[in-house]
Image (tube, rainbow, N blue to C red):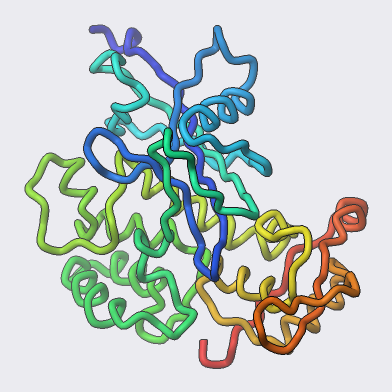
Length: 317
């Protein structure tokens, strides 16, 4: 077939994020391959007036969820992307699939109904090297680094990329580099998707749970975006209930960043930003010392183009 006749299909991928009990969650479905996948659906220009309406419609159909906060993430169009069979069944075998990714935030990880094959999963199961709340994961220095050094041997550019991405040889860990780290592991053949996409036998070396198609790359892109954005826009409040304690807010920030924060410095910066106000009500259900409940000053934040929240690390980090 002439190059100009390759069918072009547009799909929409949704990274739906919630935080529950200090665990950052992402909503996943199951594909025919049995791998976890992000909710994904085709865009039909004759049926859908906008991408946004299309996204909300089929996410509702696939998972039973109504999307709230949504922002466009990135367009994924690399050649030879694996077609997500479950939603694009019947597509021509030579079709080029372009996926427009979206990030959606919700304050409640409500279980999907029995009619839907959707469930919430902790995102660190896919990226276990990203959670530093209890210190640097041992797997980085004991398992990942040796494999990366073998892969990068004699190649200075590779060595530098590994050092910067994973904070090796004294380099500072940069929490926003989630996508850089995943892509480096993919290039080095250290994630199962690499062998799968190349049609090779799966290696004994694999870090993190796999996802269908390039959905783990899309998820890594979303985590990178969210970790960066909560520092310059107050989007973290889209993950919070209407009323919350400052401790709950800090733990949500820590869950997303994968870092422990310095409590006193975090509270000072929060007070200075003026993004929350006390309600006078107290939280007593935990059985511990009562803590005041706060709310997000949404109107003030919108009127003043409010910044995000400061992320002062604990000294040990």
